[in-house]
Length: 167
Image 1 (tube, rainbow, N blue to C red):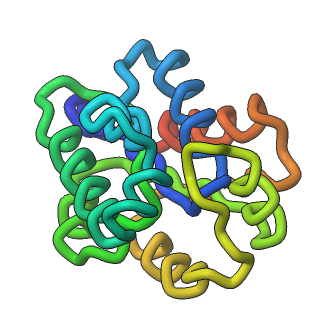
Image 2: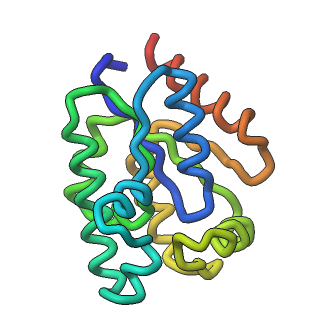
């Protein structure tokens, strides 16, 4: 794994992208960029508010924009990407230059977790998961199922895969 290669944590809402991404960044001593936080910092509004006022397409454009900005940074970083970005073929092409950690869980678990946060809209169990899962599979260097693992165990699986790729 080249030193400058970004680590991008991908997955559906509620999969644990931010939590796992923060753990990876801390363990590796790298900066952490989170799509949700970047959007809130830039707009003063949550993704949920943007989706409700401007529409989901406007939110998805912002999510793509903040990811591409993070990927263009010269300093290696851990980046938690919004789930929607995986649907864009240009983004998938750009992710080829990163180490992608796909965090996932069963649809019921994702639905329960996504309903907890006020910064995002709840996702239904069947919402776009099958199509996105196929796309996540295309770019993933490692898959980490967070459904039955602790945060520590999930982060350890991702770190182990990163270290293996470094050899």
